[in-house]
Image (cartoon, rainbow, N blue to C red; front, side, top):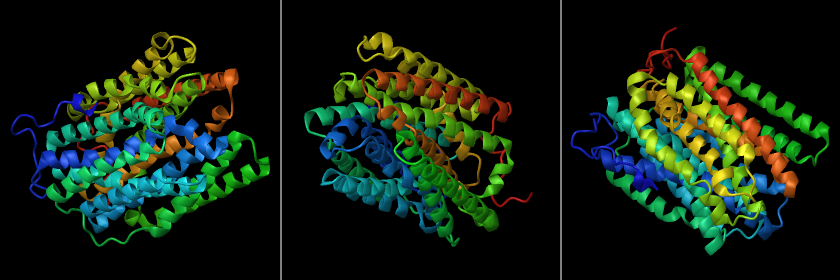
Amino acid sequence: MTSSLPCPGAAAGVFAVKSTGAGRHPRLILIATIAASSLAFIDGSVVNVALPSIGRSFAATPAGLQWTINAYLLPLSALLLLGGAAGDHFGRRALLIIGTVLFSIASVACAWAPTMGWLLGARAAQGVGAALVMPNSLAVLGDAFTGEARGRAIGTWASVGAIASAIGPPLGGWLVDGIGWRAIFLLNLPVAVIAVTLTVVSVQESGERSQRLDWLGATLATLALGTLTWALTVWSNHNEPILRILGGSVVGMALLLGFLLHEHRRGELAMMPLSLFTSKAFVGLTVTTFLLYGALGGLLVLLPYVLIGGGYSPLQAGLALLPLPIGIGAASRLMGRMTEKAGPRLPLTIGPIVTGLGFALLVRLDPAGRYWTTVFPGIAIIALGMAGAVAPLTTAVLASVDEHHIGTASGFNSAIARTGGLLAMACAGVVIAKAGVALLDAFHGAIIVFAALAVASGSTAFLTLRKGSISSGSDLPKPGADA
């Protein structure tokens, strides 16, 4: 699928490389960062079609299947900020290589997992590796290009990432049908070899500074997300006393408050500088990201599960999502260019609302019906809407900070996106615990919620982003800037 994307910089002189950038090989840098980040994007979705097979192998409960996803998303969401800041501190190239190697080792451990507990531990290690890879791949890319070339490069990075996320289910379904679910984790190894080799060859070190890392902030964020995720997961499965659920929620909120107070005390040295939130535009981008990617993450988990439960094979369920990467890949790069010139407000308003309409069409889904009339229309409209939002959202957030905080900004945006998916998955037990007609009814209810979240995402962008371009970051405060 990635081959269907036009190669940026095919004409001479398209790339504008910064004199102090990450290397002298812009095309190789682009390929290296895409290959590294694709590991995290693919693995974030490829497991979805394997959930029924994993459940049968380990006799897993619905909660256990949820944690197969959550064990990966939790450290990824909580540590992305630290991963970006670590790249700013120790060097982005070094952290990109370390994260890729860690992810590869954890992938092998997943493939060899003898028990459910082993698999969950290895999935968590994958999440840690991905938390190092994702922000630093984008930070290396942002440091290597400037001007319109940066917008094109980021647009390509974002579109390929979205494609990788969506191509995971059909690829995973093919492997599950033909070899078994363990093979989906070994798929990462050749991609990792390419990513590390190209990074070593083409990328120069950048981002080295003396700022101390915020270990306490990272610990508080991880514990807060973990506790809240546990509370939502057990609530969605209705298998714990209500007092334990409420207690977990209260503890999680208290830890989250402690994280915010700690970050406030650290000021501009914080892992997540709170001064960014003095801008209505930055807050709007954050909410837009959370709502939109929460809805999309929930769909990519539940739709294959429901289709397989209704009689689709894992491969058929994965192929049902193919219009999504095709649509996103066809338009995201173009939207990245348009955002550089016209600003993100219009695409970030229209794109999520169109996505919401696509979700609404999936209320008609029936695994026993014809794919082209009950599944395809909704997926196609979702693809069209997401194509209008993926690249503009990434470009707008990255442009909101100065070059010294690129890693932190990209980590924060990715963390918000993954947190949305994490919380959506934590609530998915309401659907996964059902079977037969009840499963389909629960899915239809979830789809209505996803549609509402997507429309709310577009409405937030419309209300919080002003007309015109913010690609220069003029609307948003720079970390360390005077008030």
